[in-house]
Length: 299
Image (cartoon, rainbow, N blue to C red; front, top):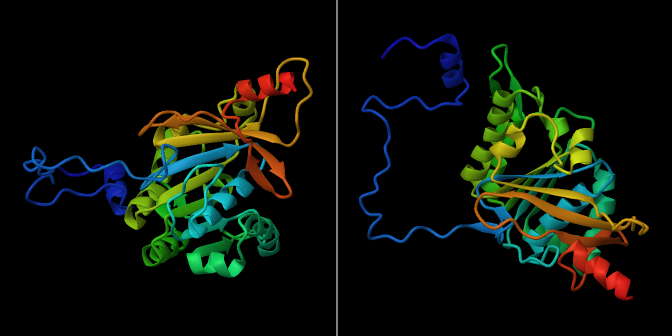
């Protein structure tokens, strides 16, 4: 085998690439596929959040993305619906790097009450919360060659996920956990590859919460940094204040979850929801902003 250059050697050292075995490349045995049906697509929320893949949930500051994803985590462990959509029941891990334990307690109290449950119910269902507010929450850092290497935190998170076997893992937010250059396509791809590996190993869905840049807000893309953030995940959703027609007063409590990418299914229609008493409640009978505007005009 020819001598590897320095960058290739560094990639193997960081376990980003798997060196082929001596016998050659590990080609997939497809000899039985004519007789076997293709496995069904697996979701934790049908057509919205795929299993074994990272999904980016973005939203500008204070729009409520952390609250919305906390609701999703609780819905999984209680076997409840989330924004009117059925969730796969099972444990959940939420790693928050912005909020202290006391703030998580306050938010979860309203969510648990909304679902007519108790904290004991959530614990029994497998809700696991981590608060890294004010602490080092970086699971991977670039070395001198620009290669992302895992930290002890990532290894501990992987060990916990393999033990808990959650349906959902949340990392909140990318600003606190990504120590690389968000405009560097290679580093972004490497970083997203880490939670993808975690999701595959744990057989879970993994949500990465993110803030858009000013241009991402003005354009409506909900992105920040390199396009690799969009390209590297299989699903992406953007939470934003619902836009109204010209001349109409905006509703400060109305939000829309817009699905910007879905590699494995149809791009779902935006979900309208209203902030009420500390939680988000889907707008009954309204599946699009156009229908809501029409109903308001009728009223």
